[in-house]
Amino acid sequence: MIPEKLSSSRREALAGLRASTAHYLRRIIWTALACTALAARAAPVPAEGTHPGPGQRPNFLLIVADDLGYSDIGAYGGEIHTPRLDRLAKHGMKFTDFYVSPTCSPTRAMLLTGNDSHVSGLGTMAEALRPEQRGRPGYEGYLNQSVATIAERLKGAGYFTAMVGKWHLGGRPGQIPAERGFDRSFALINGAANYYGKDQGGAWAGTLFQARYFEDDKPGRLPEGAYTTDYFTTRLIGFLNRTKDSSNQPFFAYLAFNAPHTPLQAPADLVEKYDRVYADGPVSLRQQRVRRMQAMGLIPEGGDLPAMIDVRDWASLTDAERLASSRRMQIYAAAVDRMDQNIGRILDALRDSGRLDNTYVIVLSDNGAEGTDEDYWLGFLAHLGMPPALARQLHDANADIARVGSADSYAAYGPGWAQAGMAPFRLTKGFTNEGGIRAPLIISGPGIGQDRTARSVAHVMDIVPTVLELAGAPTAAVIDGRQVLPPQGESLAGLLHGGASDTDNPRSLGWELFGRRAVRQGQWKAVYMNQPSVARGSGTGAAHWQLFDLARDPGETTDLAGEHPDTLRELEKWWESYEVDNGVIAIPPLGDRGKADRPAPPRQ
Image (tube, rainbow, N blue to C red; front, side, top):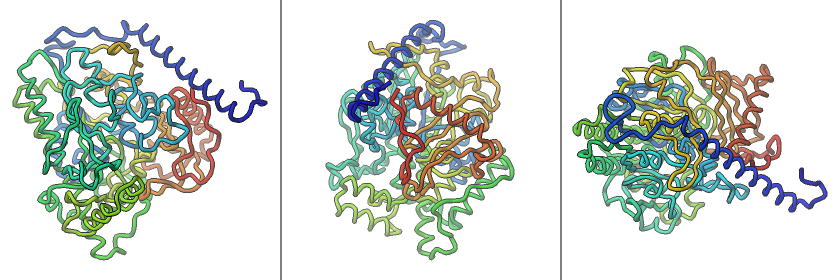
C-alpha cells in the first residue's frame, strides 16, 4: 500500500513502478506456464508433405475487408453483388456471432497474434494514444515483441508466408511485415490511403497521411494508375505462383484490402452498375436487409430495430442532397463489388494450380461500418497538418457529383448508410455496441461441409489457434530466440469439423477502446458509454453502464440495468478482472463531459 503522507508526484511514481513490475511479473509467469504446458498442448511440427489428417498439410488464405458492414454481402442479406463471397459461404460456414475490436489496428493485432490488443501493443490506435498511455506496456502503438504473429509461428513450421495490403501495425525498423514472419510482402503501412496512389507525394508529401508502402524490407510504391484492390490481389497471386511447384511446402497468405474504407473510390463503370439502387435512402435499405436476414434465418423474426443516430429524414432532403448521398452509397457498393471480383481472381488462381481444394479460406471484416462523414475526415486531416490548398481541392471534388469517387476526391458515405450496413445492430465502427464489434466471418475449406451457419460466439483472437490446430503447428513459447505469450483465443477447429456443438457459447468476452467498454457472457451484454454521435465518432454527457439481453434484443434497444441489477454487477465485476488481466488503462469514454465512475486503477 502506498503511504498517504507521500506527495502526489511521489505517489504517482510509486504507483507506476508497482504497476509496471506487476505487469512484467504477470507476463513472466504467463510465459513460464506456456513453456511448461507446451509439450501437452502443442502438436509436433509435421514432416514435409504430411498433415495430421489424410493428404498434405493445408494452405491458408486469410482475407480481411476494411470497414465492411455486417449485412453488406449477399450471404448476410445484402444487395451488393458478391457471388464469390456468397459461394464461399455456401460451401463452408458463416458465423452470426463473430466479434472484433471497434476499430482496425486493434483488431489486426488480435487477428495476427491471438492475443488481446492491450497485450500485443495496440491497446489503442497509435493515432489516438493519450499522454497517460504513452510508454506503457501494451500501448506501444505497434505490434510488440511479447507476442508472435501467425506468420512467425507457421514459418517456423515450414510454411511459406506472404502478406499484401494494409498493415497498420507499425512502420519503423523491426515492425514491418518482413520482420514479423512474412517471407514476401507488399504492405500499405498506413491505416487508410487513396485507392489510386495519389497520396504518395505531391501535396501529401510530409503529412501524417502520406501513403507509405514497403515491398519486403524496402520502401515500395503503388504504381501510378493502379487500383489498390486489383494491385494487391495481383501481387499476392504472383507471390503464390512462385511457390506452386513447391508441392511439399504449404502456404499462409494474408490479403488485407483497404476496401471499402474511406476515401470511397471505385471504377466509374461499377459505380453506374448501382444507379438508382439506393434512391430510397438508408432507412429503406436497412428495412430491406433486415427482411432478407430474417428470411435467411440469420436474425429472429420481429423485434425492434435501434433508432438511427444523426440521420436526416430522406423525404426532407432536396433532390440534389439525395443524389449526392445515394451516389456515395453507390461508390461504396462498387468498392465492395470490386473486392469480391478480386477474391474470385485469387480463388481461380489457386484452383488453376490445383491448390484450392486443400486451402482454408477465411474472410472477415475488421470492425463495423464507418459512420463518420467526410467533413469530419477532412477536418481531422486538417487538424493533423493537411495543407489548406489540398483540403480545398478535396472539398471541391467531393462537391462535384461527376468527380466524387474518383482519385481526386475524398468521400465518405456517412452515418445513415453505415447504420444500414450494420443492420440490425446498434451504432457503427468505434463503438462497443454490436454495430461496432459484430462482423461477418466466413470459413471454407477441406472437411467443413456445405452451407453451415454457426451461432456460437467466436472472437477474432480465435483465428490463430484455429489455424495452428488445422496446420498441426506448435504453439511455440520461443520465437527467434525471444519468449512470447501463448494465444488467448480458442480454436474453432472442432466446430468447423463437427466435433463441437453449435450452440451459444457461454464464454466471457471483454472490450475496451477510447474508454468505451463492453462485456458479453452468454445472452447478456453490458456496455459502458455515453450518448453517441455517429457522424463525429464521439459522444456527449457522462458515461454509464447499460445491460442488454442479446437473445431477445440483438439491436440493444432496451436497457435492462434497472430490472437485473445483480446481472449487471456480475458483468461489471468480470470486466474489472479483464481490465487487470490485460493491462487496460481505463479512461473516460471519448467525448465524455462528465467523469468516469471511478478512478483508473494501477496498471497490472
